[in-house]
View: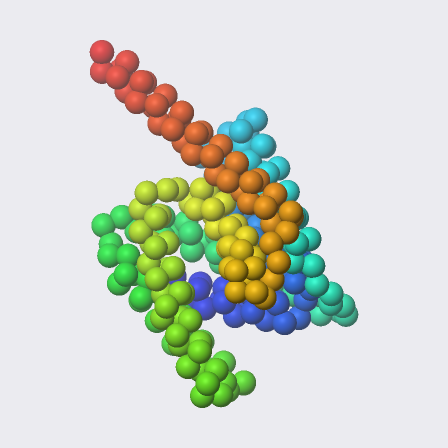
Length: 228
């Protein structure tokens, strides 16, 4: 997991430096789509109206988020940025699946700490390429300890309760939350696009949760019928 996290962070950051922000963000946020498609390919989920609706909502949210983060970039580097963003999305999808599978009975804080510590150690050689100043290093340390670390711990805890596709869809709010926080601190503006994307994301989450409850209810009824 630490190795996957290191690859995820490195590929995403490099992709952001090379390619246009809307494209990179949109491709990076395809993790929940990959998770749902993986379930269909593995035969663990059938293609139905609910699934198609969820995919349409998620894809529409991704497109809106990309549009809302409009930026400009050009050059042949865009192709490399797209590939790296997809690699990052694949890492995120794999991480969500692994945490969902192994989070039960494990301490969220210790697990998140080990995952981030491993990723940090694997990323240390990259520091030699662009050493941050003392002030920048202090700022990054505060952000990591105050936001990234607790966020990972919450993720480990949450995946003990929700499944991977639902967590992936909720994770789309990462870009939405960034826009809201940016608006509050005065470095961005909350747009109609962001609000619409939020509604689409929450609708997809609600559909997935309703589908899970209906499936669980059906399975319980089937078990009771067998018992009788």
